[in-house]
Each structure stands twice: as structure tokens, then as C-alpha cells.
Length: 87
Image (tube, rainbow, N blue to C red; front, side, top):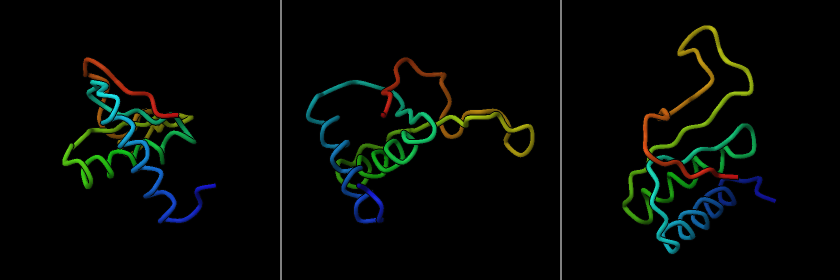
């Protein structure tokens, strides 16, 4: 179970290392609500900190907002060629 900051940091490092080792090409990390959100965000942080790869990320809301930034996507948007789905 990943329920502390240290645990989440480790989780992000695990995913980041797996992506780098696999050599998979992608333009954005996508974390589907709700469980994929911390995976995508911690992986993006680990890629930047550990591998000097500044990767955009995006996640969806279960219900679209009609105020503030609105919509159901948060972060980088889907106007990219490929996406890595984090679940």
C-alpha cells in the first residue's frame, strides 16, 4: 500500500524507471480518475527529478466542472500524438 509521501515518491520512481528502461515513446502521461492520478503525477515528478525528462501529464475528472478552468481534463491536453495511460 502506498499511503505516505515517501511511498508515493518510490511509486513514481518505479514507474519512471520502467518507462525509461522500456524505451516507450509518448507525449503525455494520462492518469484516469481516481487511482491513475497519483501514478501519473508522481511518475512525471520522478521523470523530471531522476531522469531529467520534463513530461507533461493529464488526468480526468469523473464529472466535468462548469466553473473555474472548467471541463473534465486537468493538466496537459490531448493535442499530442501519443499518450501513456497510467493505471
